Image (cartoon, rainbow, N blue to C red; front, side):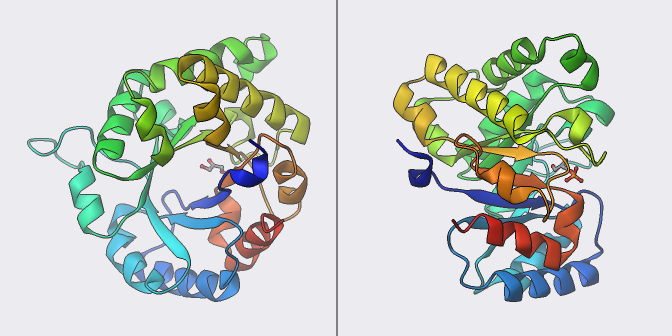
Length: 256
Ligand code: 13P
């Protein structure tokens, strides 16, 4: 399968930015700029508190709304957490799981990433599952081992038929919020590796159909060359997704 037959997904991760009123304005501005740009899926992953406003503001546009985390239990005594059913009922279509900031600051492990991914997929959400090496691991020459291990652990027990709702985001931790982007060749090398690991776990067909994003200081200046790589099927964008004009330019770069 050629890259062109995979769905390209450009997703913004707003992280802990935007109050509901700011979210409304940003979504309306983004939606106006990306109108009719249907060469890729356009997603904005917003803070939980913004979900209701965001879903309303995105209604009738080609912007889809995602959340930034989901709990793995269906309900119960888990103070501060949000379930997959709560998200779907609120109109959320996508959810980010396993972001490096969750792993780094909130004790997320491959085991919990796997459980959250399964809960999201079981509820019918499209899950953007993040993984990637830290700087020390790249410098030690173990990127391949780390990324392979994360891919295998994070996908444990997920049946092949659920992969149609899964996106893997390769986010080298050293490139996040640092302005240090992986070169297009570095991004391609690891996205290609992830695809090979998925082929080994499942099948060539499943791996070929899987959307694999790159994330880490992607912006309107470097998106085109990253997205030109055959195994890079989109982007997960932090800082630049907060500025509708910049984010829309990345969407433009994905229209090929
Ligand atoms: P930046 O684009 O700000 O580097 O963030 C990337 C990221 O973490 C997206 O999830």
